[in-house]
Image (cartoon, rainbow over all chains, first blue to last red; front, top):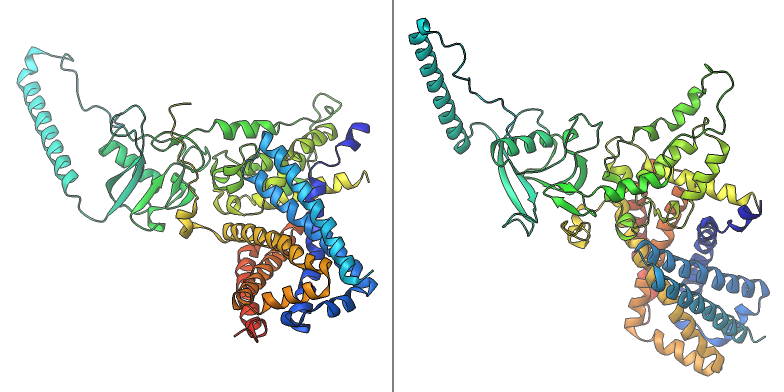
Length: 120
Length: 291
Length: 130
């Protein structure tokens, strides 16, 4: 069974995660847009208001999850688009590294912003 | 090469002195008939009575001067009821330009030789009615494949991908008893029925944008072939696992973006996208088992 | 096969009239995807002004929102996001094996619905900018 276990990242994991994050994002992105353009108009956004929202732990956690899932979904999407176009060899390795690093940086920076906005 | 039998008779045949005048007369009549036929044909070539359709065909031949750069040749084809694109091409080749080259064989949509790009869509020449198309009719070779000459494309890559999924039957063990059959239930047959219809024409692969961009992608036909065996209950468990491992590689089922072009153009109406989707779900299920 | 002729992509954008619904869906989903991920990076960058304190954050946001161009771009962002969501839902159904017979109709439905939602949202989005 050892060899079977090591091959479980066959491509099905990324595929499944893309769909799961998609389902999550459909709801949360719609909610985010609604919240920040209709409930509160974009022009009325200011630090105090954001802080009030972010200090709610549930909201904070949702936003962080939102960030992580969106980053995964987007970066994985880009990677797949490149593979579909036929990227291979060194270019592929480079893309994997660049995308991985960019995604990681985005998540780290996003969490820093979240903490700053919440005032934790 | 004209498909008509030569209209000559060997004159060395049966020459009896007693029938010489008759023989002479017959030969004279024969010559006259041949001449009138030739004249008629020449006239017909210039002025075809009845409805005609313009057929624009992609021409390319790296060995012939003037055809090194692709161009379109126009042929005027007399339209007959029930005429297919293949009929029109054969007419053009026989009457106008015998260098027009294209693959065809059965003319009844089972051999898969004559898949072309007709009016912007992959279709079998023998299966497409001229009357169903917008005129003038444009015939091009299948897209995303190298053109060898005129409408003939390189099919090697397609065949390679088909071979890559091991398109053969492999039960774990044979049934006991020499005359015992390998049974398949009617329900199981019904499930895979559509996937068995593939005629290897290559239309689906040439319609897929992913297959065009990613050379390593197996393609809808190959994955459908894998489906045909994977879902067959007579297949051995060992081979099933091997087959699954082949198609769940990076350039297997995961490349499919559900564009549905393959399903749209398949001349045998195989729901290719659906089969690929089923295999994706199957791969996910199999992998989840080990969590 | 040095003799054979490589025509490149036949189904390039020059032949857009021959595209099927499924193909348009794929093209738009990719395009909107790129826009959205590009926006995500920009968005986090803009929000990063919060790390420099409330005043910087507020003035940045309000400064951007006062520009009519930004307001229009936001409408564009809405269109892109809504289409990606709706077509994404369509794709999720396809992946589950539901409704494959009407996959092209559901694409047109997502386009129409995107249009409706965007048009309905324009007043809210551009209020105060002009």
